[in-house]
Length: 160
Image (cartoon, rainbow, N blue to C red; front, side, top):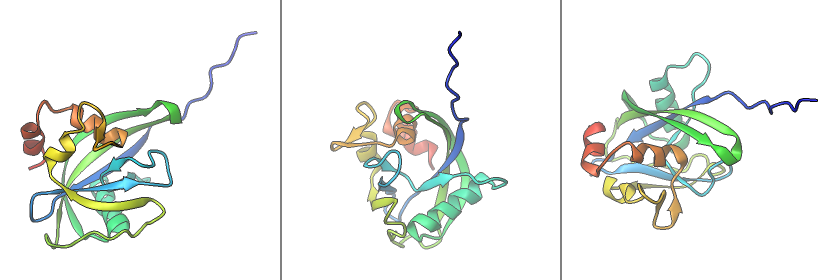
């Protein structure tokens, strides 16, 4: 009797919203309560049926942080296979601008996010090789994003 292969779930689409404050820092959060708990991430979530990716970025940013943003464009894509969780995502990274560049994020979904903070790209890029920044792991899509770039200058230029 031949053994059957386990049925693996189909890949899902995630959208990460990348936004900067008036100091040129990027918004980073710490996940909790779901896969990737304890990792650093951008605001974002699942693309809903029939939803445009840029609309998803705006919706997720508002839901998770209370920030009102405008999605400018899709910047890049990562292929993220969470081996231990049997999850597979295609993550779209959307560049967003804040309607009020001095606005501050709120933790509007405390069951999903521990904190929001503004970071310089250099600090985040410091985790490119290890997958961690200051002993805090990066969420797989963020780690895969950083691996696409040879240096922080390339990364910054991509998100201008």
